[in-house]
Length: 314
Ligand SMILES: [Zn+2]
Ligand SMILES: [Zn+2]
Image (cartoon, rainbow, N blue to C red; front, side, top):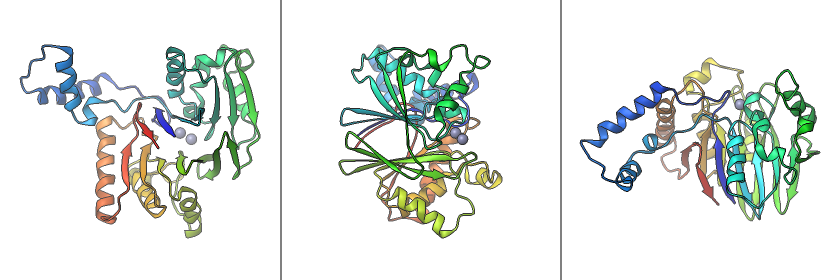
């Protein structure tokens, strides 16, 4: 099972500002320490030696994660990162022209990439949409009403199928089992558990876990149980989370607690707040590592920070 992240921000696309770029540049220049770079490979070597936070951008695109398994492509959410996936498919002449698209919910940050996804305008591409919300076709069509976007959904030449996918049910696609669960978010969001050849991936974004009873927690611990990789909504710092009750998002600390109880191997902090810059998000990541070390010193679970281009091979 191959996993690739195309969009990791929450709420709204948030490209880096000039001030943020200069801030990174300042850090890099200090580290260059008078070095001179004769060739591109010299410069590349230095860049590679930098900390992850300096050699990469987390990226400003909203949520989209791709999975390829058993020659089948699954996509989770069509935020603005979905546009990048479309461009990649066209540039790489990828032979897989059918994809199965699972939607957490239809807040803008999770569907806004669709009208800009170029393969959607090409007849040979086929999309099978899965959304437990039930009226997904209508929602997608409304996003492209003429007053919001110049091209209607019907005008997009690809083939589209809107599959029945009841809440809390499963579907099997070419041997890949996908199960959904309702998350706690305004207007409802759905999480997905993907199982293939003994490997488990969980996509659980846009959810809050405040004021939960033990049985409610257990429901999620069961759903996350034994996952090799879980993508978790860690939009806020713990303090922000306490101030923003009922906003429908969570923090890394809650994610660490839940994931460790569910025997998860790797948790990926996801749906970064658009108002937090890369350094602030990296700081939350370091705090989550300290939290894990303090509270679960014997746990071998690994914590990752979602960034555009991050991949896993399970
Ligand atoms: Zn969102
Ligand atoms: Zn949302």
